[in-house]
Length: 98
Image 1 (cartoon, rainbow, N blue to C red):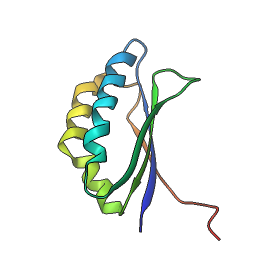
Image 2 (image 1 turned 60 degrees about the horizontal axis):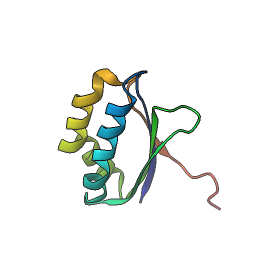
Image 3 (image 1 turned 90 degrees about the vertical axis):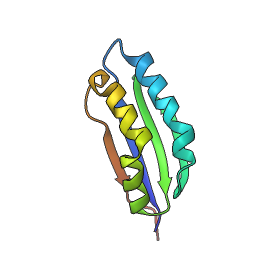
């Protein structure tokens, strides 16, 4: 059963460029992960420095492996002090399923 996820990552004021660069470095290795169906990175137009990932994983276990992957852990270590809050990870349940 696939899982859709939205993650919201907010940079501290003045740290937007560093967080943006770290987030951009995650795209290619994440898309190459086993179990990844889709991974898109965006930045909010109304709250610059707020980054949103829209993700789809084949299985919840694939998401768990992603969160523990070396590239995610490295990015978190690099920008942890530059974030306004911990990343908010939102696994989603579709409400339009009939």
